[in-house]
Length: 326
Figure 1 (tube, rainbow, N blue to C red):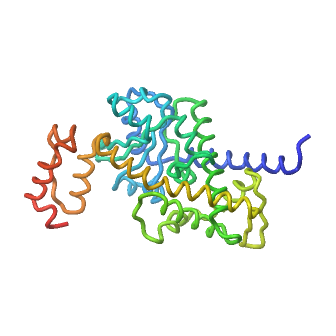
Figure 2: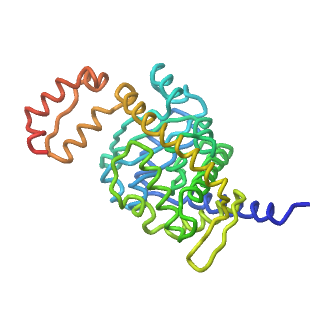
Figure 3: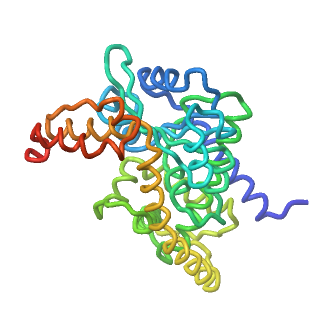
């Protein structure tokens, strides 16, 4: 016979799954769907997830297509996505690899950064035991499932997203205040994850992530705590998670390890990207053109070997005045 606390945790986990299922399946702009179909092509990944600033800015409208979209492609095996053997090996050792793709959809150029990782890597990096904060910190935020292979793949991705919510809310209880509003806990959490990663963001960035989504984050926080066995006392808008002094101390010690590893991990990913960022030269040139108006197309050699081709590419940009106008 189940105990009341077990029943409460199970009910909270069910609510999270239902909420995430509804959220993951919300419609996106048809151009995004068409882009993803072309991106996947003949490959057979498990799923494609749409996330990031374009989604927060309004995925159902045309404005989302003005910048660069962000996708995660979840694979069963590294060999399920077309690329070279060294790129697959690098992705197996230190995921994710990132690619840049641009296609013309209904007469409009659509651009995207595409991150690649396997289901096993996603599962491992969204659990509480992970010392890598990058994945659970992203997937506790709203995402859309814009392509999925089958029902089994959908369930597997849902499980990983729910796990990311559980990990994030558990860390929010440790890193947040002893009591406060839901926004206080999420803001504290995101401020810590940004500080842990090698990311240059404004002080108001955590608040921007919550903008317009406060109710959603509040629901996830409470149910995430309950599903994880963390009690919560509510007095109006003020919430207090039940975290013992010993548990908080142990959590903070674990977080010091996460912070110590965070920046070296992200520096390693930047170094790896210099060799594996497929389409990186085209992405950089698009960014420069957007900010300066100077347009230069990479040669075939520069596109395939961005490090070796960088000197001549930078020289051509300088000759065209890109850096003087920036």
